[in-house]
Image (cartoon, rainbow, N blue to C red; front, side, top):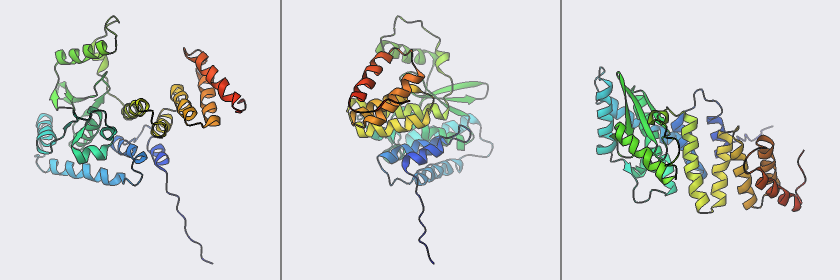
Length: 289
């Protein structure tokens, strides 16, 4: 008797879940590239990885085996920004395509964090010690260079002085209305970001884009990933519940809001969330136990 073999292909969310299940071995480039599968389900992430590997191979062929870290960095930046023409997308900064690695590879335009993800992978393949930095308002790259560190702006490839970093920080404080707050030293904001931190920031960029557009289906897809990525953050469950409510998925919305209240009963918005949960139950959603 013959039986047809049916293979279960993972959904984009299942694939992402497998990539971020453990911090050990979390491949930032692969997980970041997979984010675009919500928009482009047929996207082959391996093709994206192969494209970056090919760029890294071209770079390695230009370097002697005993190249210093500074020489490697000079060659990398010249190749990335001048020869390949990568740059910040000033004309369409808030376009969602700027958050998709494969799109940035194709157009050579992006926002700091996606440009950084590609640069970080190339730097790692050259043997450079580089990390992303979740600096307020502007994602950065930090490299260990001999006895010191160098901070780069991935939007331009420029190295940043202490004065320039202070200027970025003051600009962020001003824009966020935080001028009167306690001013912490800039070094506090230059800690290396983990791959999970980087992915969360990428997803939250998309979250704001979709929320501003009130694009609930796209926002839900992003929120699903944030819940998977940050399972201990009750606020992401609350936000998913609010999106589900907007999409009229009442039982699932109620479950998320109830989870939030259970995990954060003293939250400043707990009363407002309780009212929303009560409204959901008035629609016929049974209480959760």
